[in-house]
Length: 379
Image (cartoon, rainbow, N blue to C red):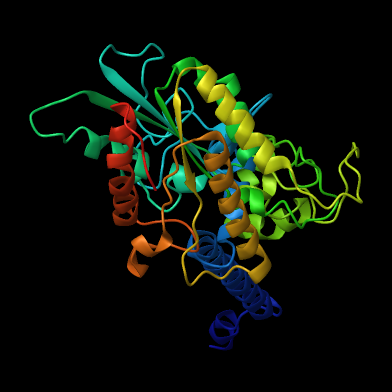
């Protein structure tokens, strides 16, 4: 009997070992569950939370997408500085940039006889930064409106959206000279002035904007091990701040504020800021030399904008420069007014909803038609 009882009692040390095993197993499971929950939280943070700004950098370093698709939707170019990335897909998943490197449907380099070709130069307000589809940007809607009339038929129109996100008059000039000149447009709409205004008061001013801009750089994807590691958003959350955070959007083009350019040649004692006027006048001369007609359209701010008083004043000043150039050189001006756009059609300080772009296009359409017919535009 005593032998049977003694055999039922666990040997000395067996129970503590089992308890330790269960304890270690529970701790391991707890750690794994905790890491899984932390990974889920990190993924939410990268998708719609405070780490969302890190997602383009993570995706680029992980080799999941072309870096240019996330960084200002652009690629570097040796003489254009940068250009919309060919084949870029928008938020809807559709291809938003054609393979010629601009937004919307491509056109053949050679013009179709009987078709009036219109080139829309500008920054993000021409590109249509506030709309998800290229067909909602004002150039595409302008083409649609123009081809709806006049009643009884008439000439056809094609419109090229040469808008460049964060583009200035410097890029408009180089993009026309080195690229869009070869498309031989009949009418060139020049809608600009907002981004140039940001260059005025940054310190160490240079007319080539080297005090403000720098060549666009793209992050190089990590090796296979690093790419696998970045599949974890939790690991990415810990690692990305160590490699410089999130150089996204316009930050890839901007120099640190207050730093002088590498080549300093413009006298600091000069108070004038000649770049914008010089660039636009040079652009207009090129357009006219190509037997095309330029139409100037000032940049406008939403009336309730959040810019500083100095920034808004500079934008107004650049609009007046366009008006002066129009008067002096007898260039058509479409004095587009911000009051024409209802509050609900503004996305932010300067970008428009699809309906806002429609209103802008509707304002420009009759003026473009007059120019195509050889008539004057009085604004």
